Length: 490
Ligand code: SF4
Image (cartoon, rainbow, N blue to C red):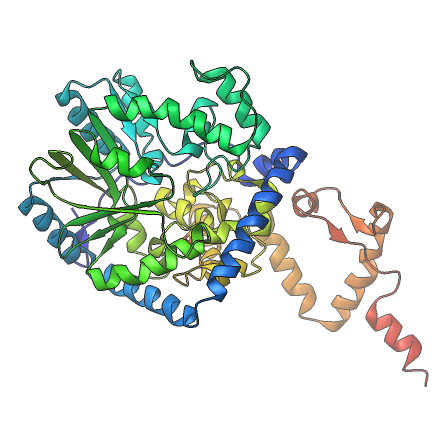
């Protein structure tokens, strides 16, 4: 087993993360044609953006907080092995059991065996990205165990036979009328006269879930944070469903990515200020649940913590790319991203959509297996400005594009069409005479100009450019021609 920073480098990577076979440009084209989806997304993201801007504006030292969050994450990742071992010791000392999972397959096997041992055939779940990442619900279903999502948006997605499209608001692509239809169709005891009033929808979900909370013997959660110094796990949420899952059942199983650790409670304080303002646009989380091992006669009497790698240690090995592991899953970068706002989350074909998905997913799976996502960005920089822990996503995107190009170079005998085009462009631009001639020659593309003065389709090989974007029409006269006509005569 190879090591770096003293930690075992675990394999295989990123199992279970991908949802679609289509590369981003093809999937995005389908999403862009869905006008209802674009309306739903535009409305939802602009509402969340406005709420976030208002509460962030209240904090005088917001930039200092962001820098503190960045510094804590950088320092924690540099000594991750040490902090994880501390967490393991503290959890075990307080009656919990720690399991290590190299990948999704191992994590699913561990959780399935634990649930089977209790004899339960149904579990309740707190919203968790990491259990989506490993495809836990499907793995449990194959073992005859039903997993019931208890977060309202996750429930909508589950009942609709759908997949989440946003980190924080998984059903962001659905509007109220669509949700009412899903509830009417899928909830056995729902009032047939259910309206699309938000309160009525919430009450229908509440009564559906209440029965599940009271009968469940096992709950499964993720974790927003784990505090190494005391072995404490935390979940933050807005609905109270998490609190029910974390306190009522006899057995609690938590699956956590190894990057979610913070060394101390002082460190946690910073993130508990950054996260709610960046995610839901609230000053603090309505429910922050923390638990430490097992407390006799109070809450779950059996606690298991599954620590998941699934490509994280491989990501940590890249000194630039590793900053993607600093993410606290607030989703602020999604809400400000012009690409996400137009395509929605499904087009990314990954459990993690949006800007963070475009830099995290390819690293967890391996860039070579997922090369289109780092290009799913205009590099406008809005994600970096919004990120509460200052992850420089635009620089990461460029870094991953470079890794992709280098990998292609290393593995191909013949250069790609893009490499040939770039070499040709470099040759043309290196000489003023060639550059002028190219400007004149470009006019042959003018017949392809569309109504708005843009060229949408060009013949091969230039179609490689226009398949994903349009191009400005070449002007009837180049700048050099204009200069010599108007100035050199004077
Ligand atoms: S990358 Fe930053 S803004 Fe995006 S989800 Fe993660 S913490 Fe939030």
